[in-house]
Length: 312
Image (cartoon, rainbow, N blue to C red; front, side):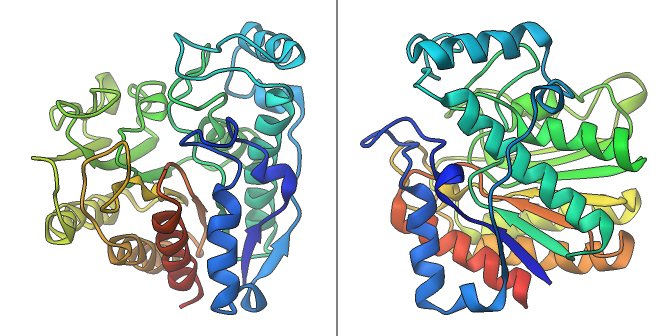
């Protein structure tokens, strides 16, 4: 059973027509998936809104109040300038988080085996600020939901977006029960300039994190597969109870703001292998988010490849 979240409320998280992170990203994927009749093979779920209290599982009260205030005003920036406020951004961000939370609850209740939330995986936001087009961090909110309400101890977060998932990594850098493996473009070449191989966790969490920066620019699938093998070895020792995958399509050749040259085959491979690992270690529990990606054709092909792999 595969559940996909789709609807106008989810698509609404975007910064206007013409912006790299525009509201047309969801339909770019969904239309391509429908052409291949994948919509008939999945359960399509309506987006769900998270409550203010649920957003504060991860974010500070002060930051959420700021998000509400600037959303109502419809102007200003939520960080140093990368993440502008638009009218209703609080409501749109709440739908991203709420859909992810609802997906996790469906998995934990046994109503579905795997979930895909295409407009989600906003991995740059920190507890007290937005960052990099990410008004909230739905991954962090999900992690806290799993621990608080489902008593899940060992959680694995895998990120194949071109950008390092710094908002997840640094907020859990010292947490030994959150296992992070992140393949991304080398921070010497791309925002946020972090995620170096020497960063493996701090204190009691040393060794619970795996950063795999790829360089130089224009790395290809063979480079991804070489790195991916390390993730499989890593997860074999972790034996997680729940797996989260972020499948940013900005690592595919032709993205306008990154420099990688993967094909959608890499996204399919990662998803397929994690399905097997989830079946082996955590009763199949796998929640997948879309993440970044700013070339609409790449979004369509990469996320459709992800969905096919989930169905396989």
